[in-house]
Length: 446
View (cartoon, rainbow, N blue to C red):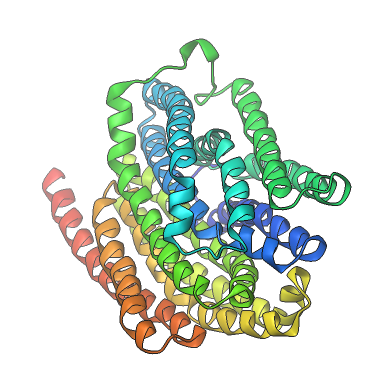
């Protein structure tokens, strides 16, 4: 896809929708885990898998954010037609993702029991939750590899190939879930094993496709090594983006800890709702990532006016499509929650979460586009810091003040729209100031 010339809106749509579907497929791995154990094992097993969602999100989202650094660097090199820079970045990214995944796996296996105790997982759920987490951690290297490989494809405007690989592995995941739980008789550990195996498939498929490419992003095993200069650029952009993603997950861990205090029914309901509501988030996030890639290439080609146009169009499309998607999910909220568990209590609690999250998702779209645009320009530290203050700070403070005084699920869910609104205001102000600075810099260069 040529991101430097021609129309923008149709290309944004063609880029973002497969990206959104890719994120949804990744989330369906976890949703399938919860649905299978909820239907065939019980609500304690469902709560055990759900209690790990925020923690797993912390790990995976952090490295997905770092992979955006590779996306931006390769996109910029593409705009500059720097073939050697692209080659170095591709091979550095692949090796870095695997090595980073191994480090996270080892640390995670060591700290797993302590972390689950820290987020107050109940005793009746703890053994299954620990078994699920330990097995899932074994698959972290291939999960990280997939996300970096996908970032390489997306830097060239290709979001379809990662989606196809994920659909294949998603089907495998569902089949293995049913096999390990219904045939072998495993519980939460069975769905974790299915998830690891399916992620292995998707990462291997992308590795093979990269090896067979005939263009600048072709992967050659003999060239895989760390190039320090390129890694420094990837990390300087990707690490703040990763930390920004981890801030969301860190605050969600704090919220999950509060949810765990409200009992197994609330834990199960919150887990089910999370796996539905996050489908809307992937719509939001896909346009943010599209904006990063489009702005990255055009900024590399010194097309500032086109960059500003990309931001305006991305924001309008993201808000409109997110509003429609969120409303659709809300309308079908009850039957969707029923897929996970038919208990009326769990469904009614889950609906509370869906309403609070989805009715404010449009505000989240503003956050994603502002952050995505600034990352495309190579400025990812500012949105990371603002998100840390506006999201993590407010949510943690809310749990220990407002929720502590009024320990109800309703009170806890109010923190989402409040934190999003405040952070969105911060990010809009930061974007306006950045554009003013870049315009001055561009005029001086001309």
